[in-house]
Image 1 (spheres, rainbow, N blue to C red):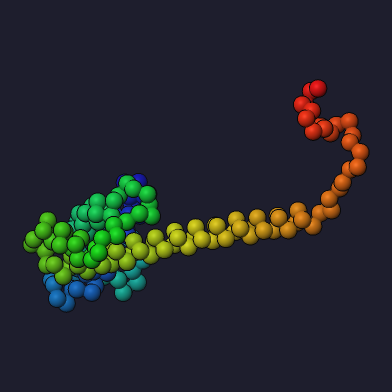
Image 2: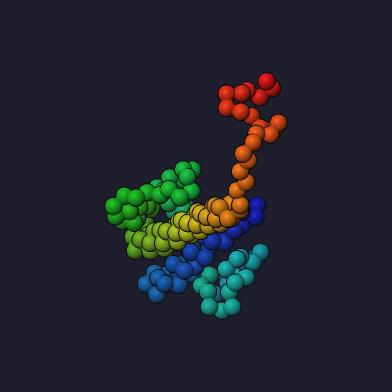
Length: 174
């Protein structure tokens, strides 16, 4: 597994653990059994965990990986990285589609995943937008700085043409 795949899996595991921590009192089987709490090799959640993170079950991690596929398709995976589905009631539509594919899974769990994942996507898009604004602002500042510095330099005027100046109508090399 490559480093980027490990990072992606770690992020999905973290999302699954968050879902498990919020819904474990309502639904059984979302978190890993205490006897299995230590995976080998250690997962990203286990590395970060100092006793407060919920370790998701293998089944929940596998579901989240499958749901991520639907999320990517729904939001146009492969299009420009800042594009996304702007349909009205986007979370309900996606939750319904996923629930149709996984009828055995309680819809509340699916809705919670879609909500969390959508907010993560929005936060990511906002970071891209903010970075672009800062980049444009810096370009404008640089242009303004350079235009002021050019205007402050004294301009030299020459009354008589020199040998290396072209006259109007003269072509270079004449």
